Length: 172
Length: 125
Image (cartoon, rainbow over all chains, first blue to last red; front, side, top):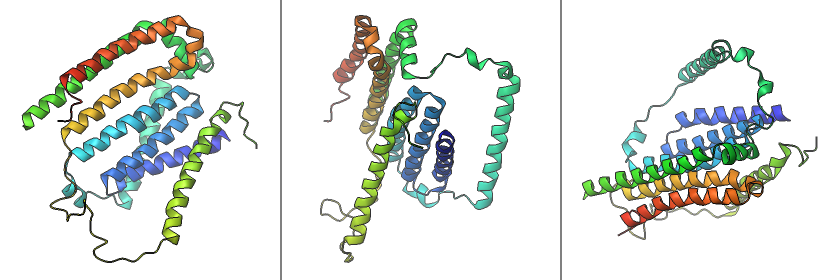
């Protein structure tokens, strides 16, 4: 059952990833990207990282994709759409081989160069990526970093307001 | 192969059901209107519609940057909400300590919210 879900998620993720670069309309590209991110979330779920999966859907597929759509809307791209570069079959095949090469290279690097080969996977606690485990660590041992995150977000808010306000004054 | 709700993946069965129902509903609604609805086209109907007036110039006009700050602020407060998710799951075991932690967290972000408000970034003039 797990294997079936995994392969479905992988096929959908790859299919939508190719669709992102192949469709003409940038908004459609953005929608396909949501699909890719969602499929990645399913893969995280299968690995047991349910918190990461939730984040993937809430933050990436939700908030960051919305930001990307806003960027598309902010720029006028009507001319861009007309002359948008289209992929041909050979180019897709080429990209496919590049991806395979890249995966093999990363696999080699991960396993042989980083010493993961002799890594004791059993030393990782059970349900390592679950919401409960992360909550337990975040709100007991890592309380201070958690509070510091709020300061970081505060800085982000101040920066966002500053940038957008400045932009507006320039326009007027 | 009957998926049980007690297993790890089985606990996500509800989400799968909602997803399937959502897709089915959309397909049925659009499909039914496509099959059942009459299609009598004329040039006037096919014109792009904008409040009853003929459109002027390019329809894909760039948005005002004002919208972008709303999106950016949404992203930041969305991240705040993400931290509430594990907190809510683990809240019972944390007790009062967890409550105080989250109050400090939200207070700091509330300062940011007040700043945004005072700066007039949410003003629409």
